Image (cartoon, rainbow, N blue to C red; front, top):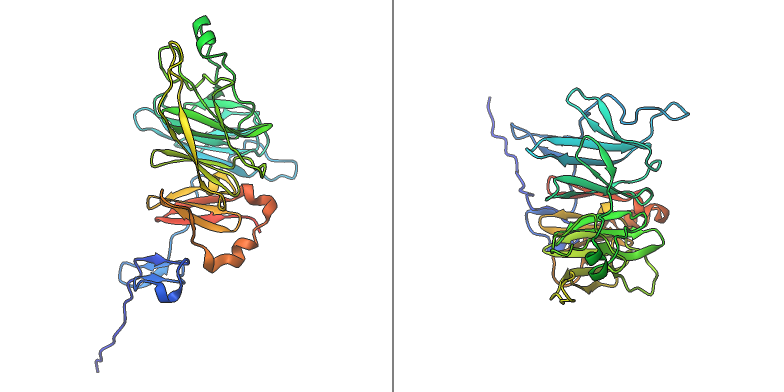
Length: 338
């Protein structure tokens, strides 16, 4: 005997929406979703998780207790020709993974368990990185070294100034054809940018004592994150967001220094860490002290985490700076200690 069995198929391609109330949700949105995905035959199966890429620990030596130090930073360096190098930092070593699944040391003797922040320099075809404890470095994916300061000519010293690197910066990004450094030890409220030589060439290793923008805040907050977005560089503190954009240059003698302006975007919401700031569906999304916020380049950032407010408030404030976000399947995933 045969019989007809009916099943209802719901389309939730709009995804998870924790921002709006249930009465305002679209038919394709859901206020609560599980970590499953449709199978090949229409059934449901667990969504894929992670995959081990190497059986070998990143660090070359274990700690005194026999365990290996945790990985605190990862980065994929793309070399000329498209060759990709997966790099990871653990303990004091920056290492790269070879085709045999073995880790090879790129650089050692860096600050223990520090967090390396990387940026790709499209002209140099190198990766630059800082960690707030050692200095300013460059790597081609196989070896790394400290960036050598530029030696200006006598004319450049007169017109532009001596080369002075920021002291132990902890944040780095690339914007408007320049390298930007922030989080200098003792001067956490400054954003430095590299300047040009006398011929107008932007040099990644030429910084001066005047080439910086200060963040005016009566709260004494330090800069927590830098993120280029829609031809603007956004600068975050715990509770503010500011935008740096290019301005009309002013010619001084034979030299035209770079010129920028800064505008306040928000005085209520900011980012607690560099790694929490991500881009999802052409929007910025980041973890602030009272929730997750989204920003589309106009107006002010708006909160999107009202439905998980208790979880946000349970985050350990002493570990805010360790919060890390990622984008997976066009969704924002954030990890923070409680």
